[in-house]
Amino acid sequence: MRNSFRQSMAWLHAWSGLIVGWVLFSVFVTGTASYYRTEISHWMRPELTAAAPMSPAALGQASDFARAYLEEEAKGARAWFIGLPTPGHPVIDLFWRTKPGTPPGRATLDPLTGDPVRVRDTKGGDFLYRFHFELSMAPLWGRWIVGICAMIMLVALISGIVTHRRIFADLFTFRRRRSQRGWLDAHNLTGVLALPFHLMITYTGLVTLAVMYMPWGIAAAYQGDSQTFFAESGQITTARKTAGRLAPLAPLGPMVARAMALNAQVLERLTVQNPGDANAIVVAVFEEPHGLKHRHPQIAFDGTTGAVVETLDEIKPAMATFATMVGLHEAHFAGPALRLLFFASGLLGCGMVATGLVLWTIARLPKPGERAFFGLRLVQALNIGTIAGLPAAIASYFLANRLLPIGLAGRADWEVRAFFTVWIAVALYPLVLPHGRRWRDALGATALLFAAVAVADVTTVGWAGVSFLSFDAVMFVVAAFFAFAHRKVGLNSGPTQESRIVRGRTALNQV
Image (cartoon, rainbow, N blue to C red; front, side, top):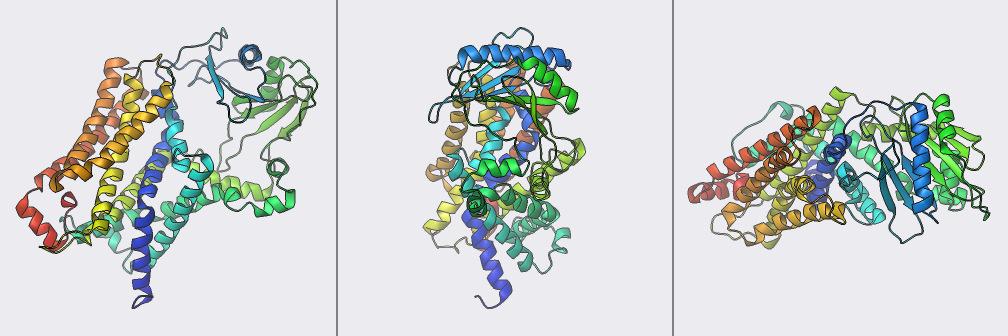
């Protein structure tokens, strides 16, 4: 313990925030971008244009096109996943799994003809969404790391509330001068202004993966059979084991028509389990109904007869609470205005973490004549590599989507490689650059990359609609923000300013 409880909490807040701050900034940035995951995916596949809604008969025909293709190309697969066309995504997306350890198969078909469609291979907004909770690592490792960091984030939030006696007064205090006090005001403002959101998003984020973090109850009650637990709680339909006898799969068209007659929600996809087996089952999965609960109504059909075997529309009360937590975290229920508010709150969370990381280094700058210790120099470099490097990496990911050849083999993976290459380059840059140029050059490069995204879109695709124009406008706004930061850093560089900053522990640009 320090001299007082509040001082102990201040120490805990500072060090807990630093230890996981770089991971949390990455999680906040990619999670905030994921509120517009669908729009990002649409922008990254410009070949797809909006179409009119398809009738049940047309959707049924499209599903049979998919079935014919999969029976030919996905022999021996354990499961098929058929993403049905929607007005915003008018193609059939196919995905199938064969055996563990082998890469999954993918294809895209025209719903009117069943012919393969040449669409640029990209992970779209799904890459940022999954990076948010998996860090592009092996799923279990990534989720465990994010969960541990989220728990420490919760500790940092609570200790921060305890530390700031004037927490609400600080909400209305912001001194713009470039000093430690100014950065503390910025940290308080971004933290307190969206404090309910920060607490909610951190807690619900932990809850979404609670079964993985604490599996012992399910393991004890179901002897490790988690699929039975999920089926009994109403989350998924009951699975079937293979019968070991071949049997033809019934036409999917009548099942689609029957499913759409039983449920008024938009039919999103079909899942075919054990295709070609006597125990095959076809599950129609619908879009989430409006509301807080994150749940997808489902109807299961016998794969050989087409008869309805299970209807899943409601979940048990305990799981309904869990689904509500997931719904709060992902905000699928939110309309345009509320989603924008979630997005703005996420940006404040990014600012809160970033200003906290910078504040830690400013508070520990050496006195005149002293040399910064190695740990401080390392934190300074990591701050630049994360706060400027991650946005630069995201811009490079978008830029690669426009510049890489459409027919490039493994194109989606090359987009991801561009993301990590630029991030690593920006992270290493501060280690070889003069002290005063590090922030300035990193911020300037990030601004240029975001501006290049919009320019590349116009020159390679053109104005492809209002949504594309809006996306490019956002890229220019982000570029302008980083250009402004670059200019402010440049204006405040110089020997005289540097010595004044060191004496007063001031200004980000000399970190």
